[in-house]
Image 1 (cartoon, helix red, strand yellow):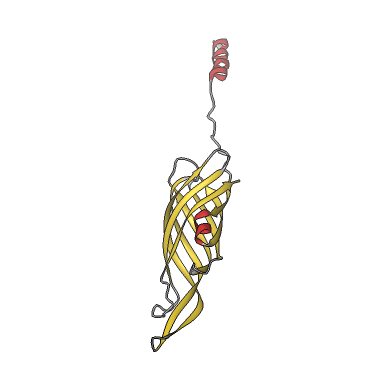
Image 2 (image 1 turned 90 degrees about the vertical axis):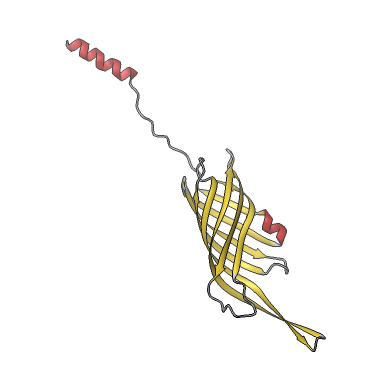
Length: 177
């Protein structure tokens, strides 16, 4: 009897299996550039830190080099929640805050002949939300489409320089490392 129990235990050790914990080696950093803003007349670069498979937090910096772009500077921290099957990829929703500086312009007419332009740089802070999609290949290259809208909170809404709504969006290319 003892020999049969011992033999049964040895056989169960050989044919038994253990559960493996599936660990993913998630690269947690992304550096991206916005190609759409580059064409529009501004330079935007983004850093994102992935918190887990479903969320990430990041910050974008936008600097305008074209006089036709009204937003001259923006610093935009954000939080994203991902709904895709891959780690930190697929459809996402984001909430963001945006510190932005924009060019306010006002035109004055003197007897219908002379036009005077009064310009002023105004700084404000906006809160908003956005939606988008992110695709990541096996080598870590990132392609992203996103769009969002926010509302400036602090400037006087009766001002001639009012920019009540701010937009956020892009066609972004980058690398996950």
